[in-house]
Image 1 (cartoon, rainbow, N blue to C red):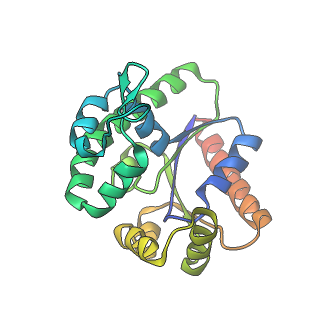
Image 2: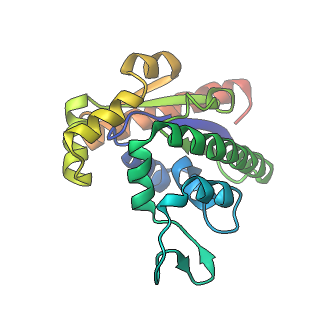
Image 3: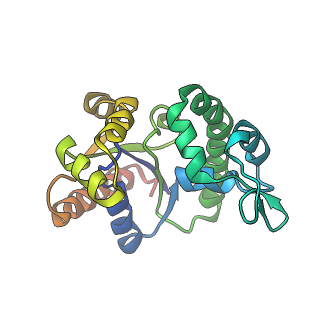
Length: 215
């Protein structure tokens, strides 16, 4: 099993790449954002600490503060507060990122023992910053020109220019992504072009692995 990190700036189209991989290859795909959300659910590893940090994002009232018998927080309000408070983001990340890293490491170990998939893909914008170069066999950078990324974010998510500027400013530069990744997938053209690049990248991995007798 080969472990491959999928990273890139916001709006680069990582989901398109993952959809293609899921439909055409024998693989496991983990999205770190989804892992983080699951670990913030009631009863999970990060719930108590995150809800404590987001105390002001909780609300009283039917269906707000309480969901059944579980305390929960309003994600939209929490996101808005985090957008305004970089220190809060840092403190929450200090709780969530180690828990996500442990969860993913455990998943890799479990899948490796089962030996049922050929590839284990980990997707996140912050893979490099969170030390995943030490975990993966290869890191892929999904590239897309900034103007196309901005257009996608405005159209699909309704983001304002200010919000896009803030998100992009907080992420690695194109040079930093390229310097830290083993493969660049250009997702600024057609879907077919992206698919051909991904297929070629995996064929190269297979050839190298076969030569070393590890796949």
